[in-house]
Image (tube, helix red, strand yellow):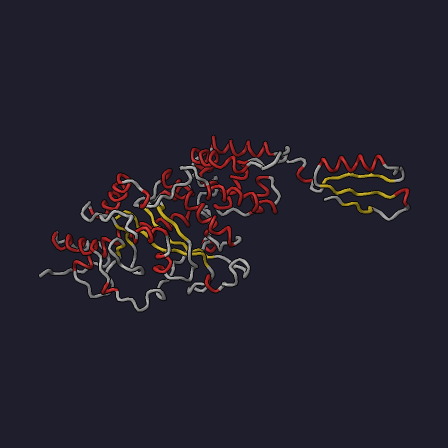
Length: 438
């Protein structure tokens, strides 16, 4: 866009024309045009619309990134949540997606800086701090960061596209999934390949335009707006399936039955000898196993609920690790509605990479390891700065259900094994009650 305005209201022979042009080529053409015209009484001053970008030194920023990656890998991991090796692999997968479409100049933001902006934003960084540290204008931070986050969420590279449903696993992969859960019962109770549950992430109120006027559907019974997610994971807390089809006000069972995994299980695409485990908010079916409800349970039913909870609690730990690691989930999501699902998918993919790097048992301590001297007790968030995720309440979706009429061959099989082996809830369990069997 070219704009010519008077600089000072003086006589015509001493008037200055201020030419504001965004592109250098157009600026030169206009300068030649004005020069060719008989404008001897004009002073022509040609400036760039965005002069702050002309002297950006990205080489120093890149040097700092590489220096931390090579000399301080622990601090580098704490900053970007990925190990240096995984950092390079992810960058290699999305690097071409972060290149400019047309010919670029010397001030084009390098892909690695866009990638760092995306990771730091997901880790909970402020856009003002990112603008200062990476020498990018504050109003450009969301654009560059979302460009990297979208590339990570949509990449088809196997390293990033790592959320694989049990339906699409080979028989050998299903055996590995099943053996991981079987260890919780000393290989006695078998058949579980995934554990599932729902979670909501607090967010700001969406606009009417973003949700076609249906704002109330995103308001939960807990008293805030939220983004809902249905997820399943394996015994190592790696996500196998994620879905955000329905609004967060929907009950767990209602949100689950519209997921692709539920449709595939209903269509018989999962081997009959395997099943998934969930909590009592879901309907118990043959391959979708839930605990017995009620207080007056037999010894076998109570013991079944205990061992089922050992399998099901994996998804709770997965949610805890996910929220602990990615600081963008510590506060309400302040993003465009179209970008919120992209952010959740990106952090779930990166979560699986971190599980492969650091494991799932007590390894969130890597976020606090080797902090700067004199700040050894520093944490990545303060007590009042984090919103603990609230799980979707499913009471509205479960009204009128006759859970006592729900049957599952897998649940009956587990109960018979418990009865035959005379198993009971361990003594160290808080819910243990000494029961004399007849």
